[in-house]
Image 1 (cartoon, rainbow, N blue to C red):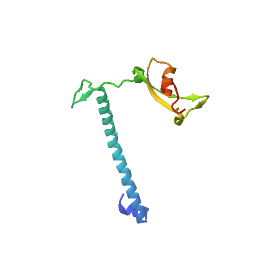
Image 2 (image 1 turned 90 degrees about the horizontal axis):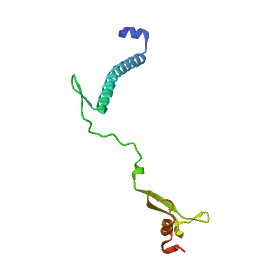
Image 3 (image 1 turned 30 degrees about the horizontal axis):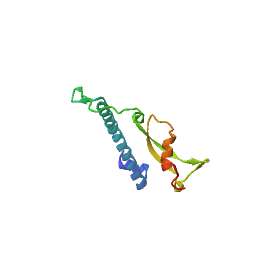
Image 4 (image 1 turned 120 degrees about the vertical axis):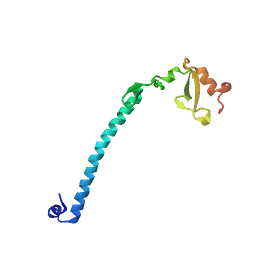
Length: 133
């Protein structure tokens, strides 16, 4: 379509400029989408080959020994020998605050231990008495 045809259809210069910019923009989008589709496909193939350990030369594919080991998907806390426990002192149903010798204490216990009252007593009551009273 020539400029004279556009003048007959769109008499105002601003409308013709807007139409030209719109057409150019759409044309660029089509060209980019074609290029992006090919680029995306090659990136996907490359990432898949990298995960499988396959190296692609010009005409051949061959496998490479994997140097990475897969990450473990197990519970690492189950293998630890100790566990961290936070103890607090509750007297007659109320928490004893830190200012009065209470508060919370964080200690490490062997994994096979249970609620051991003597650990809590020695922690909160050194020398068999409360330090704040």
